[in-house]
Every structure is written in C-alpha cells, then in structure tokens.
Length: 529
Image: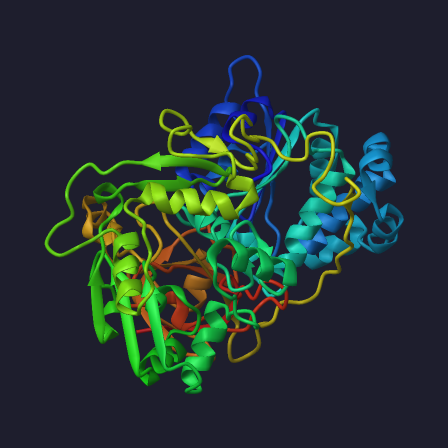
C-alpha cells in the first residue's frame, strides 16, 4: 500500500475495485465503513465488482462490470476525466512523464463503446469518473479481483495511471492500496521469498546484487533466477524438479489446476511439508515437519501497509513442533552450514543489514509500536505514506504506462456457457487449514456454489440441490446457493474446501509479467445431480 490505515480517515472518495473487502479483509473493511458512515463528514464510496458484494450496498456508485473488463473500465474513466478536463495538470507536469502517450492510448475508450464491453451503463462510468477526479483526496483499494488474471499487471498499471492523472499520491487520504491476501505475505516478499529478488527487492540477476550478497554473507547467488509456483509445478510434472520443500503452504488446494498439481507432486522423489496441521498437501508428503503457529513463537509480521510489528510467544508449541527459523537452522546445520543465530532477533538483524528499507528497524525500536518501511536509518521515523514530494525513480517522476484491454484467456462457448469466479467468504480463510478446524466452521461446513436465480430456473436447480461444475480441466460437486449476488451467466465458488477444491477448475496459464494464474475466470458447464 502507498498509504497506511490512518490515511483512510482523510479520504473524501474511496474506490474499491476487485476486492470483497468486508469479507476478505474485514479489519480494513471496518475502517472503510467507519469513514463512509460518518455522521458529520463522510467519504463517497465507489464499488466496482462483477459480483454484488456486501460493500456494494453501502456504495454511492456501484459499477457491476463484466468479469475481465477492468482495463476497459478504468481506461474509460481516464477518457472521461481527460475529456472533461478534470485531470491535475500541475501534478502531471511536475511529477510525471509519458502523459501524451497515455492520452493517445485512451482515445478509443469512450463511454459508448465501453458500455458494450463492460455492461456498465455509460452514465454510471461518467459519474464514477467525475466523483473520483473531484475528490480532494481519493483513494483506491484493490485485491486479487484485479491481480488474478492473465492481464493482472495491466489492471494494476491502469489503476496507477488513474491515480497519477488526478494527482492522488503523496499525502494522506489518497494512493493506490493493494490489500495483501495473506498474513505477512508482505514481509515474506520483503525478505527475499520471491524467485527473482533478494531481500529488499534487489534483483538477483544484477551483478551488484550478487556482489553485495557475497560481501555480506560470504556465498554466491545462483546464476539463474528461481521459478514461480506454477513453473515449479510444471517442472515437477516434467521430472525436472526432484524434490520440493513446502513451508506453510497448501498447493493441493490453493494452486491452479488441482489435478495437474496432484500429478506433479506425485512425481517428486521427495516432498517435505513444514506446517501446523496435516493439510491436503502434507498428506502426500514423504516427510512432515511440525511447525509452531503464530502464538507459539517470537518474530515479526509486516502488514499490508508495510508496518513491521513484533509477534510474541504466548504459549509453548505442542509435541515436537518448533519455530520455523529453528527448523531451518537445524536443517542447515545438518547440511554443513554453520549459522550462529540464537533467536529470531538475530535473524531480523541480518535481514536489516541486507534490506536497505529495513536498515533502521530493530526489535528495540518496534518493542511498543511498529515502523513502516522504508526506514533507512536508526533515527528515521518510518514512512507511512510513500511518494511524498517525489517518486522512487531516478528522476523522481512517475511514469504513465498505457494499457490496452484484451479479452480474457478463456471465454464461454456452447459447451462451457458459464464463467466461474473463485474467492473467499467471511467464515473461512484461504485453504481452510485453520478456520475449518475452528468454531466458525459450523456456520459453513461444506461447499456452496453461488448461482443466479435466472440461471437456476433455466437449469431446474433448486436451493440446496447438489450440482456439478465442469471446466476443461476437471469437475467438482457442491450445493447450490441461489442468490442475486452473482450475475446471470456466472457462478461464484469459495476455494476453502479441500474435498471439493475450486482450483480443480482453474487454468495454470499466467500473466506474462507477474506469472500470476487467472483464478477469477474459468469457462464451465453446470449440471444438476
């Protein structure tokens, strides 16, 4: 996120797109609701989502675009803002480059044309553009409804263009704010758990990164970049990867094309899973290493707005379970690497020495309150808001990057006439390895597949009927949940249920830039059982 949570209090307009915020991120959702329901001064809310999520009921403007048409919708808003001269000329001149190319790129994205592509009435798009551009402080929030497409990177670039156009960076109440999908996923990325990055997003392909790591840690980085999850599974399926170490992840439920994942994992010579429960993936493992959960270990989490916070051990881990860092250290010792870490604090100090954005953070400084990176020195107060005064590029300016809408990777046809969308529901989290073992499991303890009433009538499906959903990759069975939340021609499937994994249906194609799979769009057919 470019801005922190406190910044929401200063927002005059909040635009939520591709994010079921109140269910998937309920804490942030409560902050947004508090701001839009203010008794004296309240923000206007724009919600853009193919599914009528709960937050749409609070919206001043609700745009129900067809799934996969986000770039077209955002470019149309940019077109309207330029046509009506609502853009921030002073900000663009002082802080951006490539503006003329952006103007040319959106000329054809007129409200009349985009109404046909998105299904959103043109007057609603115009209203949203006017509302966003005229806000003193307008903030954008998005999640995986934007990123989990084969053009997810273009979706994000388009949102950045919109915010730059109106000067919505560098102060409280504005920004482009991605809500991270899992606890500490921001921190994991920050410290190098990415195939192309060392800690601090230093590219492993660059010689300066290789030299820096060697001088500080004494070892050589690999000559080649690593593989993303999808590519690892493909390589395992082809026999090119012989062993896999899975830590706190459940790819048998969370990865695309479940049947392919099962095939890939079964071909491995060695599968090791380090987790707190015997997940669907752990059940396939040759070795399971029992890990301590969050309340059983010390460490840090970095939240979605880049704030590094302390986590403290409350109870002892059960049985033979150990903190992750300790398991990894013991494995390293077995392989002949002599690490001297005596505590998580020692590990964090090394991270701070390598990652420039963490350089000024220490356990002592975050004893009482977290710090947001970048925090380059021990005296630095942290950076709750990014891009104040200038952008983090060599010339200090942000760059408009024109994007073009293209059709989704998979479209409906006579055999597969519906689009399946996947996501989370309030009562469960991710693959359900924790929430399905908690008291909330009793509220929703089986897969319920949302289907529009019109489609249900056409297929002679009643509430609670068992239905089968089939894509080009496989099929799953679940109970029909008839609701107008899901638009005609599409269904919504929660992916929390390992016995009926929604990702059996999804494709392992990826965005060419981020290599993110398109979890949000699968062409399917529906049968009543």
